[in-house]
Figure: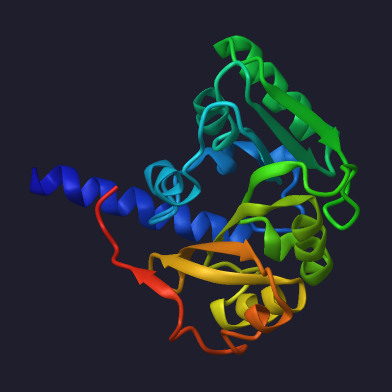
Length: 226
């Protein structure tokens, strides 16, 4: 058992090192296999805990990569739900499409587009999420404003960030969210690998409830297993 844990720990450390030294933005398709390496703390189980996808919902993913999260989330939406995935690289979208077809997942809709100019009308998504993608966008503030635009007033946005060269630090995220009309309401995980839940602000005052650089008014969830 001790030996197995050591091997798992060594594998996680190798994944982190590989991610750090090979990371570029956007992540090139030629290195797509690295995108399937699990990152510590940013697990699928934890994504489930914060996203809480439900049957019949329409959800948006920015930067699906090879579909690690897409193929996990889409089946949870059921046949009446839909997962729109947006990426600037058509090769990534084609890859996700092939994997979805192999698994019989038919509710993923690809969109080759820039997150700074989303090709959707206002208020159509129940939820949206980005995992290690926000920091790779040239203008994350504009991307968050676009996500706010396409979310329903009751919608939710999940941002997952990992400690690499493009990470959006938590203090920065709070400030960017405020300017986009969003508010960080929950945090899950340590600062170097966290999930944050953001909600649209219903009033201008709500956006200023958590000043940039502070998160004392944010519900910080304990780090649990999985």
